[in-house]
Image 1: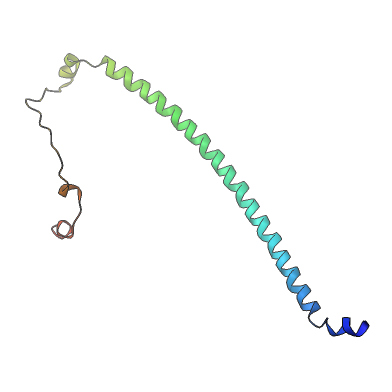
Image 2: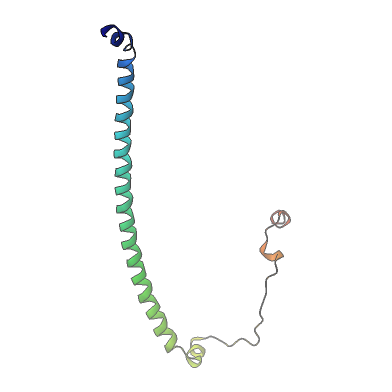
Amino acid sequence: MKSIAIACTPYLARTSAVLAAVIALSVLLYGVFLLEAVANTAKRTAAERTVREIASRVSALEGQYLTHTQALTLARATDLGFVVPADSTTVFASEGARTLTASAVGSR
């Protein structure tokens, strides 16, 4: 029995070393990915806080806008120097106007 165990173990040390290296690398990568997940969660929380602050600011600005638009009348606009346009025209864009082609780029 001893001779069989000795004959089959020439690669045992090398195999054990490779297995230990793979396990160590796996543990290291697990730690790195776990830290990245925690960092991304912290960044997301900070971004959510910033979005809430910006939403509050936008809400306040919308309130100011509504207040100012309610105070604006045609007489006040005329006093500020605005004039009523004589004629207004609606302009429609065609499909060709929305497409950038090589000829349009070359004509610049």
